[in-house]
Image 1: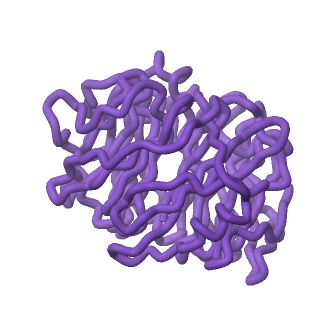
Image 2: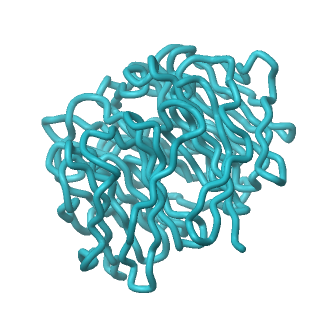
Length: 377
């Protein structure tokens, strides 16, 4: 039986902190695209980091060029063609990359659509905008030629799309599926690594939804499970197809995801010793996971056992101090660098050491309160 693990961390009082935004300004979009175009994920190669302005006047992708040593340079913005909400989305996965780094996908939560960009040495090129299949798209996930959108409106849903080779997308018949109910406060949608399951976290119901994905790409379900900790929020699958999820109530939990979509707790509600751990990333080798603790201005590091068990790297829970208003996290494709976005401040760049501890490399940029999402190459 195929298995994967999920790790969660939540804090009821931390939901507001986990809903903040941010934004950035920089040089001309053309220059930005050229500087950030190097999407190489090879070890030691340069790359880029992306976030969303999420402004009501017009959404844009903010771009940072990443040097081979992990440091960042502000590189500018490229318009999405849609609009944002002007406030925090309370989600993880608002901007994502395809596994090969050739395509970037961004939500336009104000105009209810999704922008698709081609990533090349020439920069970011907008190829299409597609309706999100619902109201207020807040999170995206990609597997092969499948794109799923999580819409966070009152009657939230997921909706699936088939991607083509030219950067277009077509709605998959029968793929739109409801969440467990109305006003559930969804936070993220993500494929399992094998693409057979989709997972959604619900903050308001303390629940996790699991959908099966058929050969035609259409989702069925959900089957809804109680979260081991309060306010499940961000999550990530590791290299072994184990899923780690953060809970805003101050904890993290891990689960086995069975081939039939069942969830079995491995480590339930492990305390971070910090406030509002809402966002979570995991290194590609599956050894370490990190939560962004919005109430504490810190990052908590976890060692992930081969069985999915979680243990803090530091007894007090603070593996790094990054300052107030920290929100989305992103790890570079080579897992050597970690990036922390703040709701009204810079992006902090950190190096991931061999033992999982973090070394701060520097800070860059200035974010408006509307910024949302973070992804790195």
